[in-house]
Image (tube, rainbow, N blue to C red):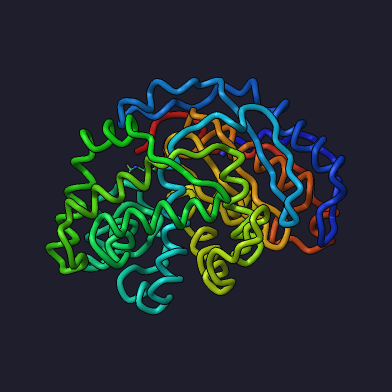
Length: 346
Ligand code: DON
């Protein structure tokens, strides 16, 4: 991962965020430092995604008290894609219980690309992780009711996380539905192992819709801030999911939110996060804030290049790394590290 955080000096090493003006100026700086970065490739395996503007770039930070920092293209709508997996997982855990979900979908990183068929084969069909497609399909399959009920559950739940009514992007849905043979194969494999109790193609359809819900970087920051505050939406103040579910979901995101680059992300940034192939990234700063970014060019694992760099900068500049003591934050010298910044999803 090429972070490009350069020689930024330490601005905060405290248990809480600095004042609004200081956070705002750092969000502006994160945007300015990375707007010119042109590494990465816009996803094209879902044909319509290839039409995204590679220069679009927005960073939003929403604090748990509702204070907001929006810089750049934070109102550009795009499909949530795999970031939906985090929120659907939380909603399903809230609905049927952590243990029932764990019985069907594990919480260990697969180390495999998001669309890997091997993720099914790893443990005799027991999906190891809800953030790759195999486990995400098995998670969506656990939503009670028929496909129409399941879709309502997802739209309603993700809208409560966002604090506004989210809508399906029909064009993205149609484009992915016409090209999602691999996900259909994964669902059939899960069925063959008895890991899906319903029509696998109906599960793929609901999952494809959930990935095509339209959001903005600002929405993602509100959704992430809801996870940061134990399930309380910072704008509506609604308790969307229980605090224990947030805790569990954040553990999964820390271990596996960025696929085979999750360890590298956690090592460099120290926050739970999640990416989507349309170019969205979230990072959750427990007790403090949610970060949402949008920039379509991706690294080889399918993670937004500018999004990762922007979050890395903010983590260092604001002292957000969960594993850092005050002494470590004070000693921290943001640096550039080698890694993967170019290419398309594996
Ligand atoms: O399953 C798929 O292929 C997509 N709908 C979602 C993939 C995705 O966002 C992977 N992320 N970085």
